[in-house]
Amino acid sequence: MPALFRRRPRSGPLLLALSLGVNLFLVGWLATQSFSTPKFDKFGVPPEKAAEAIAKTLPDSDGEILRHVISSRATQLNAARRDSQDAMKVLRETIVADPVDQTALRDAFDHMRATRQSERGLFADAIIDAIPQMSLEGRQAFIKTQMGGHH
Image 1 (tube, rainbow, N blue to C red):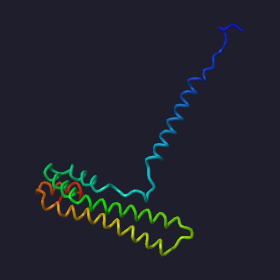
Image 2: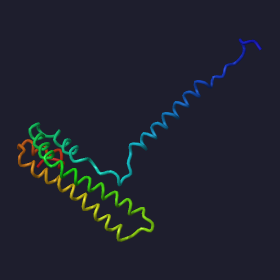
Image 3: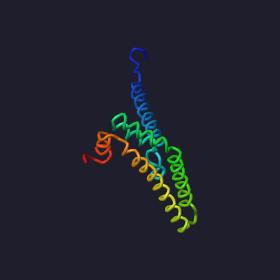
């Protein structure tokens, strides 16, 4: 058969596009699996990041006040965060123990709850100490951005 009349398969571009689509889907799926964490692994925003987000909503001088108060308590806040993460690890281990010890499970949940409350309490104490040092404008900005509106 002469080369002039031979048909070339046209599936090459289609297969290439299909392969590229599948590969992009797999990369996206793997990325979401790699970057997402189970619900109980999420500890929320670290205190320094939460404080920075709040500070950015305040006038510059008031933001610096908040940053200073948080940084002066970084050791305590970080220790409380580690305690909370350690308590979560113990809770996970208690949940997968076979057989499940109901008392140990209750104790692990109570301990995890207490450590999380301690962490939140330390952050709240820092905010409580920072607010009186802020200007009226900064306190109003805090109410507007962190407490859902005007005073």
